[in-house]
Length: 278
Image (cartoon, rainbow, N blue to C red; front, side, top):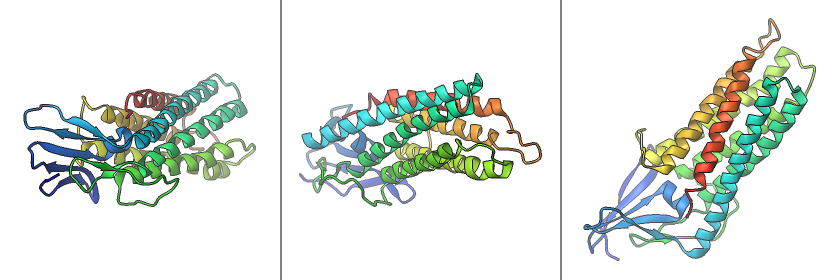
């Protein structure tokens, strides 16, 4: 298939969109998120207003579809459990009870993040001909620091692992203020920061550089809602700092409400991801 040289768009060192002018007329457009979530690129003729999706092979679409189900369900359940843990904390149900619910929710977050990383790792790539996609063999792990989808999902996965440290340490009792801040609060802050970085990369990916509002783009809504959840988690983490002079948290209510509302955002994002499928 003849074509002119591709035009690349992106953010920083990352390419998020490639556009080819086809010899027979029209355009072929590959977008990073669309390829890894839907296994497709768009091919449009000059007389068509909307591009027609051209999809990867059936085996690749099947794998991406199964991963999408895992990602969606994991974040829906993980977010719901975090919201439940925060609600129990607001009702003074007991630190161990809340910590147990949070820990199980954290396992679901980690599963969803790893499934997202697998989607990015095994996403179809632009083919040697314009308007085509190529799929390689399956990889459980791959190091691809120049692909924004891979970097964003890897940072998210790393954030869930750091949160795991925070959640495990939250079972410890009788900690001094300094110990609580080092073992519980510090991993919480690092995890929240990694979530925010991942969300920023996801926004840059769907916006192809400069951040903007894309109300008709489902992918934009998903990453925007998740980034709001990350911001609320960060607010909760800041309020969860133990003041050494008093041994009390900065604001327990803000910490619990921030966690609850942030978790709801991630559950909503998980529901929306059900519709962003191959």
